[in-house]
Amino acid sequence: MEEFIVTQTKSSPRIHFNPITHRHVITGESYPENCIEFYKPMFAWLAVYLGSVYSVTVEVSFDVLYINSSSSRVFVELFDLLEDAASLTTEVVVNWHYHEDNELALECGEDFMEDVQNIQFNLVSYQ
Image 1 (spheres, rainbow, N blue to C red):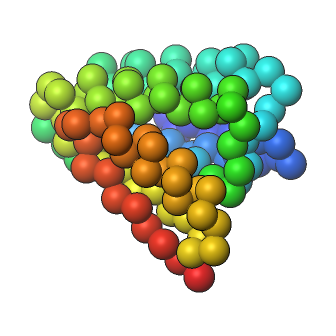
Image 2 (cartoon, one colour):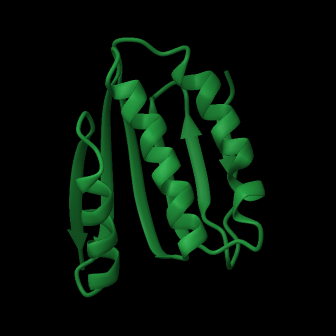
């Protein structure tokens, strides 16, 4: 399986998912014009990937400065997908990075963290 890489733009994040290291990163801002279409290939890749990994630790790191409401709904779907994987045999760790001055990003991470039970969800502050 090949890596999944999307180049960052002004309105969409960089996505780099690595099936060898099981480390995946979403970074930047997320307010693409058509959010569902933008993230559709990511979900297709993840469906195949998560269906092929067993007894590994999957790490997903987010460093998203801003997300609009459409992106937030997509991230809820993403966390649901990761939650399903975590309820089986895959350990899932989410690292939600946020700048210490960005209270909105912290609150967003806290909201996502409340919705998961089987995922190890870490809020990671940086300066």
